[in-house]
Amino acid sequence: MMARVGRKTLKHLVGWPLLACAVLASQPALAETRHETIDQWALAIEDRVIAWRRDIHQNPELGNRETRTAALVADHLTALGFDEVRTGIAHTGVVGVLRGGKPGPTVALRADMDALPVTEQTGLPFASTVRAMYNGQEVGVMHACGHDTHVAMLMGAAEILAGMRDDLPGTVSFIFQPAEEGPPEGEDGGAGLMVAEGALDNPRPDAIFGLHIGARDLNTLYYARGVMHASADVLKIKVTGKQTHGAAPHRGIDPIVVAAQIIMGLQTIHSRQIDTRETAVISIGSIHGGVRHNIIPEEIEMIGTVRTHDAEVREMIRERIKRTAENIAESAGAQAVVSWGYGVPVSYNEPALVDQMLPSLRRLAGAAKVLPTPAVMGYEDFAYFGEQVPGMFVFLGARRPDVPREKAEPNHSPRFVVDESALRLGVRTYATLAVDFLTGRAR
Image (tube, rainbow, N blue to C red; front, side, top):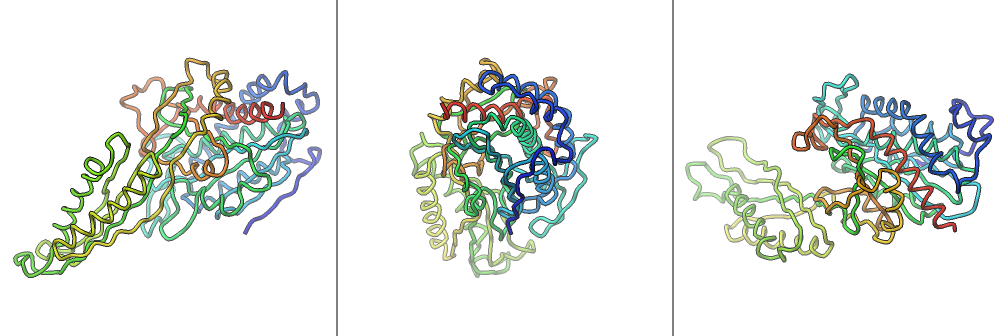
């Protein structure tokens, strides 16, 4: 169910920061001071943003289960006097609408809220000790991908922009998204479900921005023109043979051998059936089947991932995987059934939007610390938003300066850590992209 919270007047707010109240009383013209205002406020609330991040980090929640985090976000936006706060979108998603005091376009800012089924090994004083059930297994839960920082940074940007609302020429939509890492098996979720349930409606944004923290150079912003992330599909192949004694394989049909042949056959799809200039990966990550050393089982199930940077190549590979698996199995008298689980399209940065916003990024971090990056093979379901409206996604470097690049733990590692000094740049980036887009389009 979707709940709606109406706007409250500032004089009735509880817990509104003293800084925001002081500035609202004597806010100068936005066109002259917007960057200085954002920078000063980001510095003033830095400690609170870090405190939010640590609280969320210590209390992580898996996809479609982010109830505590969503409540924290919704309460914050409501206290800031947002015109509308919608909750329960795509299970636990939150959308806050902040209408400026002047007419203009609409821009959306997005942060993801979910943690991963990872047992934390950082040794941080605020490390997670949370455990939960995930796909039928008890697991540790950790913000091993930095989504805790994304939520905290966007909460900080919301506070700044709420204080500047009278001079904002347009509307800002804040999207706090669940299940970016994918919903639990058997459930729907993530950005695709948020779109289906109206997260981009009323008002419809003219552009959307997102960012992701990681173990790149500290306080450096990275961008791409065009493809930013790969598409990703969960591949499942079930091979059925005929069970028999391990000492008499000729009396059955060995699905293990067939599965091995299929795996090798899959690796020839990119090297022999697709133009090798196209970027693609087919990886099998898990094989399950059998219960005993001397019994050839009836069935084997494989799961894996397929990554591409092109929608047409994605479809070509899907067709060829089906043909390869089925025909190899048939040649041995077995049967292979190919199916697909969770999938995400290619994430694409609109080149015209990138060109428009690059001056903003360079002012934020300095020209030497705004760098182009090649498309990565990781996926990002921000892609679903980018299919609907022009989008731009940015990487934020947060590797500790005392850690060499080659020794930095990557996202999804149980030892993943970030330098929290990068959070202030993240807050400034969210807020500045929104304000500069609105003022640029409003002129």
